[in-house]
Length: 275
Image 1 (cartoon, one colour):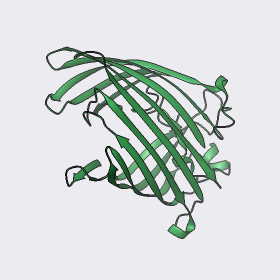
Image 2 (cartoon, helix red, strand yellow):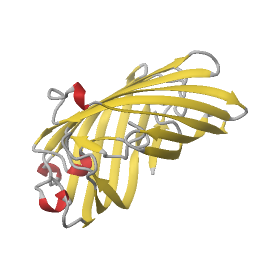
Image 3 (cartoon, one colour):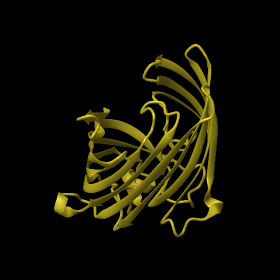
Image 4 (tube, helix red, strand yellow):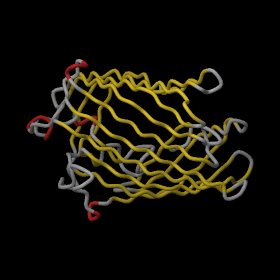
């Protein structure tokens, strides 16, 4: 249940996610040196809490605090797989809690489907036993988005996203990931993972007729042990196209159907844009 609430003429906001996950995921190993055909299935249960509270201190500029909690239990492992046989952080489950700070600049014209403006978010989190966490690390994230209105029917959205993990190491389920319905569509979420990532993506959006729209998108991304060790030879690429159906034209809320191509063909059906 992701959410965002605004108070007092949008001077204050609380956003994040409250969830309970009971699911099976694929694990493809850590880093860039895994065999292309390697994958294993694991099961995990966990509650998730993501809370960020911010206050506007200047026009469109917000500062605030964050709280993170995942209490995950590994319910199923492949006895022949890496998670069962290698010393991978988090392969026995554990409590992962953290506190952090956030700085956000947001002058977008619309939250759901943006035509123009900027969104920039910088966050820093600390995870440690002083918070009850079983894992000791810190995480730095940067998310920058720019939107262009070419005409009433034509728009372009761009995004740069990067994160870095420092310290003893995050559990494997909390590492920097490529793939999924928002970043690098066309790859399974977590198809590539490590302690650092950098992603650049863009999307062209076109209003066709009635409530129907069309998009085309592309992305490039890298994971590695750190930003300093990243090599261009490890860059992955995805591309795709999608349809939009406006369920609320006034607030610009769309049903999104995307087809992304990475190492395979993937389909995504959600409400709201990828970014």
